[in-house]
Amino acid sequence: MPTAIEWLAAAIAKLHADRVYRRFLKALQHPEEAQVRILRQVVEVVGTSDFGRCYRLDRVRTPQDLRRAVPLHTYEELRPWVQRVFAGELSALFSPGKRVMMFATTSGTTARPKFIPVTPQFVQDYRRGWNTFGVKLLRDHPEAVLRAIIQCSGRHDAGVSPAGIPYGAITGLLAQTQKRIVRRFYVAPPQVAYLPDACARYYTIMRLGIVRDVGFAVTANPATLIQLARTADRESEAMIRDVYDGTLSRQFVSDPALHRLLSTGLRPARERAAELERLRANHGSLRPRHYWNLAFLACWTGGSMSHYLPTLRDWYGELPVRDIGLLASEGRVTIPLQDNTPAGVLDVQSALFEFIPVEQATAREPQTLLWNELECGRDYIVVLTNTAGLVRYRLEDVVRVQGWLGSVPVLKFLYRAGRVASVAGEKLTENQVVEAVCRVCSRLGMRPFDFVLAPVWDDPPYYRLTCEVEPQAQLVAEIDRELGEVNEEYASRRKSLRLGSLRARVVLEGTIAGMDRRLAQQRGSTAEQYKRPCLFTEPGADDAALGVAGANRQGR
Image 1: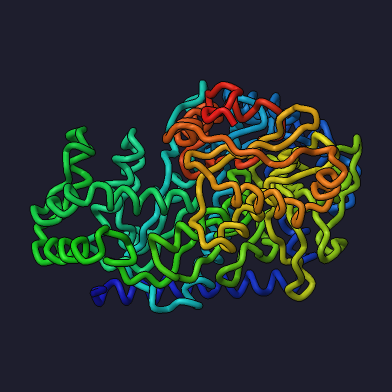
Image 2 (image 1 turned 60 degrees about the vertical axis):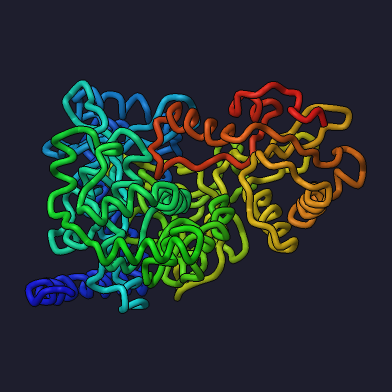
C-alpha cells in the first residue's frame, strides 16, 4: 500500500501533471500559435549556428519562411553537420551557449547508425509529450495510480563520442532523470540496462516485479513485453526459488556490484512463492495474466507491430492496450488519447510539422503541407523541425489522416517510407503484409507466427513466405488471396499472371531470432528500437538477412 508521504507527493505531482495536460489541450485549441512558438524555440537553439547562418535562420519567422529558406534534409544529408557536433564542434548545429547532453542512437537506412543530438530543450519537449500521454492514460485508468510499473529503458551511455559526450538510448536518460516519486514505482532501477545479456535483463525485471502489485506495463516494442513474459515462464523454477529465498540468481546477474545494487531490498516472500507454485501447477505455465491484476498495457500497436497483439493477449490477458504514439529517437509525432487504436493526435507542441503527400515520396523537390492542409484518408510522410537541431528533417514515417480533433489531425502510423516491394508494379507495403497475415490467422483460428516475406525473381516473379513452422497449403493460399484483398494491384498482377502465387519456405527453429540479433547489432538498435522487417523489398534480401541458402529447406 502507498504510504502517506507517497499519497502527498502524488497529489503534488498530479497538480503539475494537470497543468501540463491543460496546456496541451490549449495548444490543440490554438495549433497555429503552438507551431509558431516551437519554431521560435528552434531558431533560438539553432539560429546562430553554422547551419543557421548557412540558411539564414535569423530571418525565419513563420513556417512559410522556413520552407523558403531551408531545403528538406534526410539524415544522410544532415550527417556531416551532426558529425561535427559529435566531434565536439557544437557550433556546427547549435547557437553559442547551447549544450548537448547525449546523442540518441537509432538505426538508419545505411549500416551506420544515426546520432541524434539531445539538448536540454529537446529533453523538455520529449518529456512533456510523455507526461501528457501518461496523464491522459491514468485519467482513463485511475485504478493503476500509485501501483508498480513495469518498464524498460536502454543505456544512455552505451558509448562516448570523441568529445566525451555519451550516446545510447534516450529512454535511459529519461529514466535516470525521472522524478523521484515516479521512480519509486518502477519495479526495476535504470541500472538494469547495464546488464549486457537481454535474457538477464528480462529475468531481473520480472524477478523484481513478480512480488509487486503491478498496475501496468509500458514498453515501446510489444515484442519486449512478450519476451519478459516468456522469460519469467521459461525460468519459473529459478524465479520461484528466488522469491522464496529473497534472492536474485547469480546465474543472470554475475557482476558483484550490479548484483548488490539490484538485489538491495529483496526479502524472502514464501507465501508469494507458494502462490506462484500453485498458479504454475493449475495453469501448466506461469503468465502475467495469472499473477498480476493489470489495468492496461502500453506499447506500439500500429504498422507491423499489430502482428504481436494476439500473442500479447495470450500472455497478458484481454487488457486495454494504449499505443504510445508515433515516437522515435528524433522526437514525438502523435499522442494517442484512446485505447486499442494506433491513431493519435498530432503533438503540436513537440516540433514544427510538415507533410509530404506519399505520391511525391520520390520527387526531386516534393511539395510539403502543414497540419491544416491535410486531407482525411490520405497518406503522408512526416517532416519535422525541432530543438534537436533537425530542421526540415524527413522522418520517413508514413501516416494516414484518420480524422480530426478540433482542427488538429489524428494520425495513424502505417509504415516506414521505402519499405515497399514492387516487382510487377504491385507496390506492396509492409503494413499490408502484416494486415493480411493477421486477418487470415484470425479467420482460421490460428495463433500468429513469426515470418518474413520477400519477392523472388522467377518467370513470373512471386513472393515467398519464410517461417519456422510448416504451414498448411490452405494457410498459404488464404494469405495469397488476402494480399489481393488489401492491395488491389497485387490482385491485378496475380490475375494477369504477372505475379505467381505465394510460396512457403520453412527454416530451422531460431533462424528468425538469429536474424533479429544480427540486424539489431548491424543497425546499432536497442531491443526497444528494433522492429523486425516483416517485408523485404529486394529479391534475395531475405536470404541474406536470414543467413540461409536460396533453396528452401523442404525443397518446395
